[in-house]
Length: 246
Image 1 (cartoon, rainbow, N blue to C red):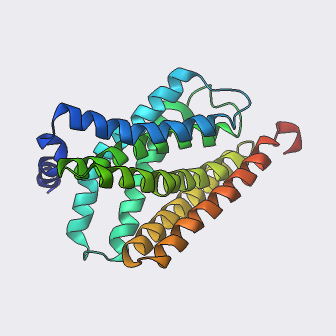
Image 2 (image 1 turned 90 degrees about the vertical axis):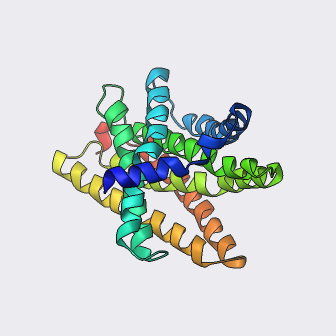
């Protein structure tokens, strides 16, 4: 079943029928907004991380999109379309793979040496994921000769979906950062709780976006921006943590 789902997904991707120019435009439209957000969030770190780890984590986040695709197809085969279960397990697959992208490259390295680094690396992986995901979303309108719709899609994902990935991965990062100097078992508990909340927030966002229109969608997007403000304040708390105060 896995192989069949994998083949169905990749043969359905529009990239296989797109010209090189179209792919380039979509890629730029997908990756540039993610890099803007990355530039913004990297300034939250008073001790900049090694650029090589940032680049690798970003690329690993992009790879996670490819890895999650067949998994999501399999999930869709097991649950009714548009059901909350589908959105929840899709969210679980994405959040776990984004976390693993950051963990494999950076969270096990010596560069992960202060609480705020969890946010930097998890956000970097999340934005890498968003960059490639947004590329696919902006590519489809281009294939139908609708550049205006492609631009609108890119803008909406810049202010909505990309921020969602920041919020969910950032939520997990806050828990990891707050437990940075705690005992190993508390770190594991904090990571588990943070991951659960990240998955739940992601699933709720996707579910309500799909079932709501107009003002309902606006409320969901506004909630994401409120969450960003909360994360910014939480980051200030994390940046004030040091070993002597824990």
